[in-house]
Amino acid sequence: MDRPPAPLRASRLAVTAAYVSQGLGYAVVVTSLPAVKARQQVDDVTVSIIVLGVSLAAAAGSIVANAIAVRWGSRAALAFGLFVQALFLPVIALPTPFPVFFAAFLLFGVGLGCVDAAAAMQGVAVQRAYGRHLLGGFFAAATAAAIVGALLVSFVAFSSLGAGIALAAAGAIALLAGLVVVRFAAREVPVDEALPVGERAKLPRAGIWVFGFVILAVFISDSAISTWSTVYLQDELLTLAWVAPLGYAAYQGVVLITRLVTDRLVTRLGRRPLVFSAAVISAIGCVVVALLPFPAAAITGFALAGVASGILIPVTFGAAGELAPEHSDQVIARVNIFNYAGSIFGAVVLGLLADGPGLGIAFLIPAVALFAILFFVPRFRNTPEAAPSPH
Image (cartoon, rainbow, N blue to C red; front, side, top):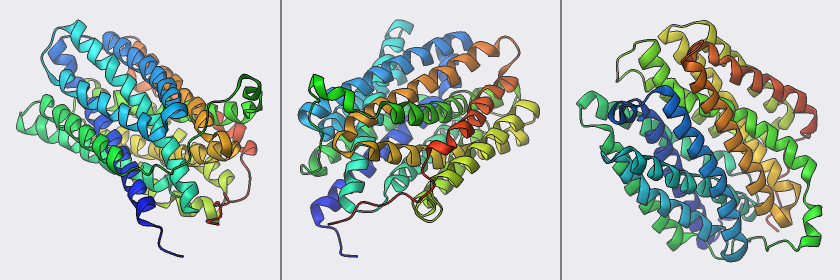
């Protein structure tokens, strides 16, 4: 295979930088929740309200990304989201009054959603330009950065430096990634034009709902683990502060491993076996967390649950991008909104159950959602994804 031209390689580097920033920043935020919760002196219900607000703000951010992309390109949308995160992550780190803290969290959520959608848009476009599967690698970069973020929070907790240091560092990395995107993301990456009113009906609505539900189910699990694994291990299973983030790190470790092989597996095996296997294994992991309230079992269960996020997210976004290649940005933006519906169900509902039956048994919710994916396996083509021709 011929070596891709330098501008295309630079564009791939820029997209990778965006995924790295997104993975690290989000991991730092969610694993810092116990420290932030203590600093702001709020309970689990308040944390659930914050997560709900961030999820809604992120859904709005996905819509903003689509609006920017159809006018100025997904590169502009991606840079905008990164700069918003760079601005408000340090504000979250500061000991501000709660209203200021909450507003900063919401605005961070807008940037989060904008980057989620725009990074997927750019990733699909760069993958198409390369003529081979790359999404698994992009998501793997985000996962590796998330592990670093969780370990960074573990380190600052162990060394008593404070979570604010990790949040400020994540903001600086988001700023750097935004500059890389502005400088190196290729202008020639195709971007959809806005759809005329008469053309909107041509979007593949059935496919959007099918793949959207899969994304919703996966993110119910992902957001539940991302938001509550550290809190569950520390507050309910009474682990040490530096041990609690390791549940999330184990989860992201499995996500990383599976994402590193997803591009090859989807070509060799096809979508259906991957979707079926990932859903079953991850659902079992959530059941283990719910029924075995011991730190080792919980960390093991979180690790097993990582298979779904590792495989299903890149496979599903890749399939969504192929539904209507001429309008892939619009399709991806719509499928991405299901991400935040999953965040609400996975993070907020579990938090509300924390004061009742407890966080542990609440992990049966993501288990049910993951098992429900099995009903949609036949809707995935039982042939490997065909990489677009480089010609």
